[in-house]
Structure formats: structure tokens, C-alpha cells
Image (cartoon, rainbow over all chains, first blue to last red; front, side, top):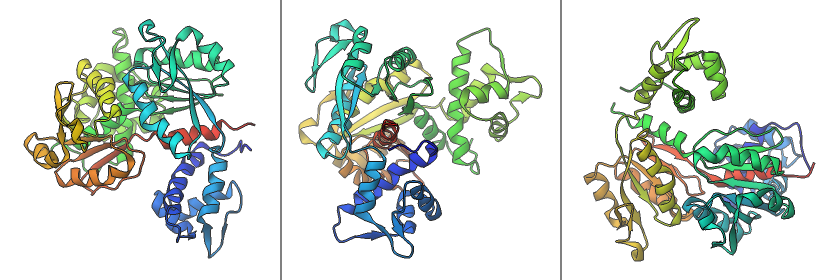
Length: 214
Length: 214
């Protein structure tokens, strides 16, 4: 399934809805949710909730609302969370290793997210062969071969800022289709690659603004 | 200085402009930039660039553009990046420790960001007294006292999701005014606290969507 014409703004809201539904699904008594309540919990207006979901099918009944568990499972399918996604981590400093433990391993254990970290890369020869979570750290020169042979689709970049663009270009050339960038720098990727940024510095600068004396 | 009525949407774009100017400032030959070029590099329309900056003063000349170094320094002042901001990290698992090294220490070394991590907290008694970057890990029970006595304004939350809301509430009660949340859960804070989220799971779910077969 793929819905080509759907804008990224819609796609960005789907995980917000899913998070609300995951939370509600823990309480077995709740069966139904209105678009009003779903929107309120997700921080989105109710009309937009209905419009976003209508792109993908008819999930609710007017005046009744959405069945929580049904919509939750449908959203997981729409977001492609039922399939295993094979991931490479590039840059195995302390952040790369910690992310693998803090987030990605958590998703694996929860069975709510099918990311599978399949390869680790680092430019530092001293790290080659080090083991993390059962994977050894590989040379950057192996990047393209390993990504192709291991069928890896997504990469997480945790290298220092000055190397991030070169890494992203190499990843795109190797056939990677989605990149999550942790390096504190803006990078460019070809149109066929989706980019997401976990950018601490922009958020910290925004917070700093609000800490000024009044 | 504080500009109360300026919307957060404007504030969020200022770090994008600053990043472009920081980059251009490395090249000493470039002196001026048009709103058009600044907008293009920051991913913002030129009219919006002019409107955003006009909230804070008259920085450019019509038909000439902005002086890069002057605007860069003014934006640093507007964003409150010249003052030291004292920070606590709550949750000293591998992620908290790695963040301290990867990002925050980098900012300190660059002298482009005046964050100073002043205290580390963790709920696990086995970690109390451990040293990271010259700071020892403290008991959560000390949170309020230490935040007040050390004059800490900002906190970074890197605890597991199920504890994040309680930690945020305690931080708000202790007088913290800005929180960066890394826990993969939505948390609520009082109006006087600014919240920013570094949420890996929402971004990863969005990327997963784009990895579907066509």
C-alpha cells in the first residue's frame, strides 16, 4: 500500500493519533473515541482528525466515533509498522550506542515497532570489530556493500556535524531510503530519500529564548 | 530584553536563520545576504524572513540586504545565547551521559552556546555518586533543593517514559522554566514552563511510512 498524493503534514500527524490510541488501548474498558477527543489528546482539531483519517479509508461512524483497537491496528498498517525495517547506525560514539539501547531496543522489546538494527559503522579504525548489542562495528568502506547485501532501508546518523553530509550522500548512493539525522547540522538528500532530524541545538536555542529576564 | 507578544512560530525560525548565518560567517568574504537567500537557505519564504526579523528591530536595508556578522550577533542576543544557562540532566542512563558528551560538551567547547550542566540526577541508588563530566549523580530527593541552590533554569529529561511526567511535574514545582524531553511520551507542564521534545519515535514512525513498497 502506498498513498502517493498524501502530504507529509498528514503523515506527520498519524503517529500522534497512534500514540493516543496506544495509550487508550491499555485500558480495556474504553472501546470508542470521538474525533473530538482523539483530536484534543493529540493536539489537533477534530475536523482535521476526520479529514486526515479519511485519506486512508472509512474508519469511524458519524455520531459514534472510532473503534479504538480497530483504528489503532489500521494506523499501524498505514504507517508500515507491521513490517520489519532494517536499520544501519553510522557513528558509534557514545550517542550511537546509547540510542540503540534507549530507544531502538525498547521498540524491539515492546514489539510495537519493528526496527532491526543490522549494521554499525564508524570511521575510527580503533572501533572496528567492537561489539554492541551483538553487532560488530564496521569500516565505512563497507557501507555500500553491506547496505545492499543486508537489505537495509533506513540509517541513523550520529557522526559529528562536519561528517554528516558526506555520510548522508554515501547512504543515499547506497540505496538508503530514510535517514534520521542526529548530527547538529542541516543536511541535504536526494528527493527519493526521506529525512528526519532529531536536532537538539535548534530546540535548545528556542528554549534559551524563553529563559530571558522579563 | 523580552518580547512577550511574539509567537512561538517566529521564535522557532530564529535558530534556523542563525544556523545559516553561522555557516556564512565562516567564509570571511561574504558580508551581505538578501532576505531571499537567507530564506532559501533556511527553508523559509523571503517575505516571512523580513517579517520575522522586523519584530526585533531594523536589521537590513532595502535593496542591500543584511550584514551577516551584525545580524548573526543580534540574533544571538535575541535568542539569549550570550548568557550562561544552567542545566540539570535527569536520568543518567547511557543516553543522558552520551548527550552530555555529544551535544552539550560540544556547545561548551564551541563557545557558541552557553549551556552549563550543573547537576545530574537519577532514581537508581546504585548510580548515586558516579561521576560524569566532573559531576556526581544525585538522588532525586535532592532535586528541588539543588535546582534552587544552584540556580538551575533548564532541565533535560532522559528517564524511561513511565517516569517522565512525574519528573516534569517535580521540575516545574522546583522552579525550572524550560524542559527538553527525550522520553518517548507526551508530557504536560504548566504554562510558565517551556517544553521542547526530542522525540525519536514519532520521527521513526513517519519514516517507516515512506518505506512502504510502491
